[in-house]
Image (cartoon, rainbow, N blue to C red; front, side, top):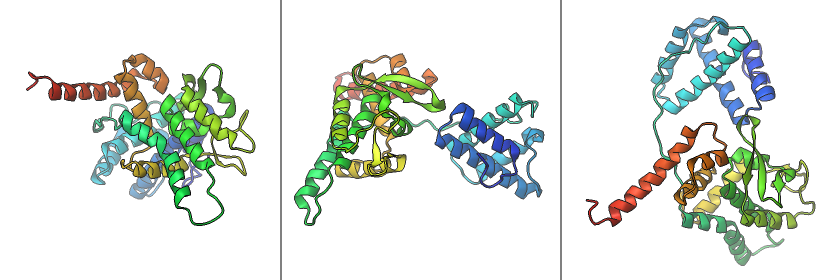
Length: 319
């Protein structure tokens, strides 16, 4: 995979190939890491009138860049993302013996702001899951032209939302689902998550029924390597993130909810509702495909905050 702006940079090109082919990194990781390295390349060249020789860079080269990012008023998360790309890049160079050690080791970065995940209540979630069918019904009642409206995109959207909420999938995971990944008898999905790691996770019968109903309306139901959800049935193109985001905005607005909520918030809702109902943290970690328990623990803060609010509201001696 060549660096779009600097194809002559062999180290960046080899690193991107490594991420894509050997690691199986997601398109989002590839895009973000490439952008971070290209931004540094452009900045360094502007400052020095020559391109960076990555293995020879020193810690001060990145401390100056860090101050540059601070002056641009980038968020802490954006700065952390760039240095995450640098960390991964220099680990790769060290492993290849192109570099003795990472120049960004022990560079103090601004701490990321802690934001508790936003989520929908169970009632809000139920309203959202019902929204595609309601919108189709409303359009049918108000339509004044021919041909008739195709119900299948709405049936598909219901199945997509049910599957995300039922199994806590990332948007990349829902787009990557293949027909062969569904075990109808055991009620499980085989999901390829970050780093192309596979995991088996349960899926509810309600979601499976929604998928089957969607498939029943297709001329050629998916099988084998076919995508479970199609953007266009004519050419068999699988659903893609932007389409899910656009359709979700419509349904959120129709429910009177914030249309700025992302598909990832459905995953937050899945985790929060499980913990609220008594699921243990380790199980939720495995279901979400988190490599580290600390990533999952943020959802316990959400549940604890809700308990505190209920206590403050209901207990006569709380105040």
